[in-house]
Image 1 (spheres, rainbow over the protein chains, first blue to last red):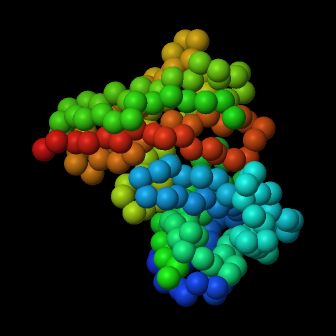
Image 2: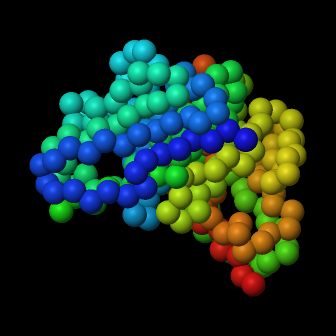
Length: 115
Length: 110
């Protein structure tokens, strides 16, 4: 079945640094990818929709200059958390849809801890 | 996005069937009903989806009410590995995104 690979699985960084998270569709082309974040004991919150070759569409309340999304190819989307602060500590999850299909495939998530 | 309502938690026993309910009284004719589940510290996993008719796959069955205002995810024989948070989500066919609600935390007792 289709696989979405997310890297790294976890990252610890100092406050003020930037962190990049990669999301790859390993065996299919994904014209659309999604980024979510999840705090402990809470549900997933959609951050943005990423379409290959165009600017991402951010959900209301999500700072686009804070969370930079790049979807340069049909198999790779990246999320960069710029100038990370402790409140950015969260579980970040990407997902991808096979073009024309209904279901989403999710990565295994990245746990970000900002000290 | 049309809203879904699910019980916060449910509990069942291993090897017994589990029926997870979902209410979506404001569903529109073009909304697909999706179910995903999430195990601890992992990304969600697709379970099943449907539009109007009941659906079966190797993981579960989806029973959709005739008026489509509710649906039930059926795990025919629960195992300990089925313990997870189950999310019922509506997706309009014209929309790309999936917006998650709070889900049902399913506990399976040995």
